[in-house]
Length: 245
Image 1 (cartoon, helix red, strand yellow):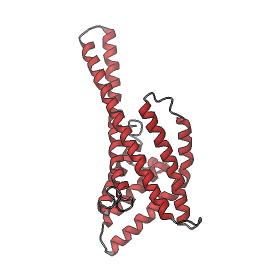
Image 2 (cartoon, one colour):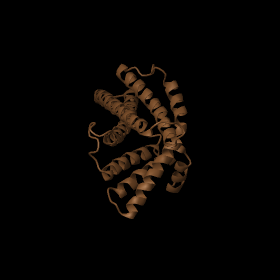
Image 3 (cartoon, helix red, strand yellow):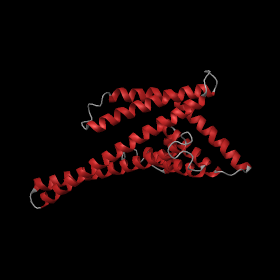
Image 4 (cartoon, helix red, strand yellow):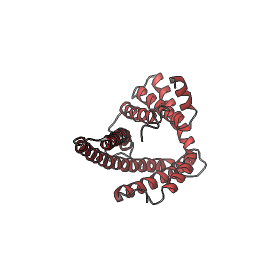
């Protein structure tokens, strides 16, 4: 599949367009920085409009999120109790995020008579919590992945000391399982990285005096968002999507 075909295939999907819009939003924020020139002002307008476009499109995301959460249920398929509790908490936070964001959006458009600022702050707080849960889950899964790789590596060494067709087949099976675990490890590292840089932005946009609120300039926030967005785009790129988590 050539690059042009991959780009077209990506842009034909909602997720693909959303990730491209996300990159453009943070890129314009990064380029505008704290400058006061006319070009910087235009970039800030672009940032606001692109961000608003994504928020409008997310009005329809809560249904798909609800369906995914219902499919997950109480997480019976997850045998690790810590991960199950984290997944359930994350699912509830993500579902709540859309509800709160919808209220903020309707308040912004004056469809409901409420102040939108409080609801947007609540959105950021929920996003912060969701990202924190995602980081903890990624660390746990990375640890479990590494332990599984070490166990298979030891088994491979022991099996290599024996001979025979059956052992050869077992070694090949172990090699395939190790390859799959390493691919999963790459995906987990990417989740951890993009969640961490997004967390930096979420904390930065909390109310003044909370955590590290206001510590980062628009240029740094734009850079963090660009890094996160590129990772998210990379993960859903047509030729890569099936290889990563």
